[in-house]
Each structure stands twice: as C-alpha cells, then as structure tokens.
View 1 (cartoon, rainbow, N blue to C red):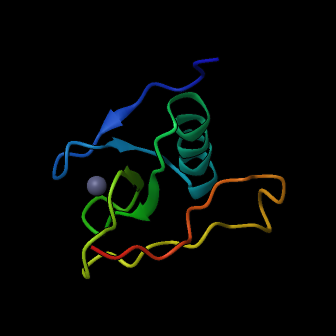
View 2 (tube, rainbow, N blue to C red; view 1 turned 45 degrees about the vertical axis):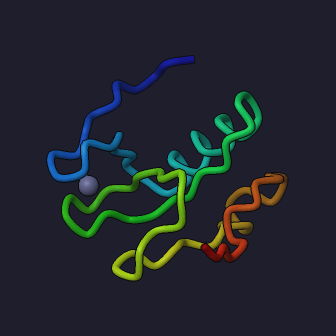
View 3 (cartoon, helix red, strand yellow; view 1 turned 60 degrees about the vertical axis):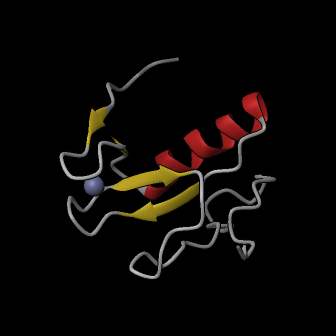
Length: 83
Ligand SMILES: [Zn+2]
C-alpha cells in the first residue's frame, strides 16, 4: 500500500507528490475514505504537486481533474467553489 515515503514541501509543509496522477489518487482516497474533497495543484515553489482542502487562492490556478488519465474517477476536483 505504502510504496512511497511522503516528503514535505519546505515552503508549505504539504506532502509532495511527484506527479499529478499520484496526487489525484491521494485526493481520491481522501474523498472515499473520509469524504474530504481535496484540490490538486502544482506548487510553484517546489515544483511538485500538493493537495489542499480549500479553493486555492488566485496565485494557484486549480487543476481540472485529468479525466484522460483517470477516466473512472468520480472525484469532483474541478468544480468551482465560491466563498
Ligand atoms: Zn511545494
């Protein structure tokens, strides 16, 4: 199950994912297991992917669910949210 050791971003303290699919999988697990909807976004500081539980600020454009990579996913990561 645990085939990679999470590293933390020095800037944000978030877990670093090497690619978008990996981050998306983690977000999907969180949604299934805990019902927590997470956003996947690319960190401009460290260049890896992070998850965030709330709509990223304007400095981070939210990343649409890559349906071409995970067509079976039910994650609703692309829906716009407003405060
Ligand atoms: Zn980072």
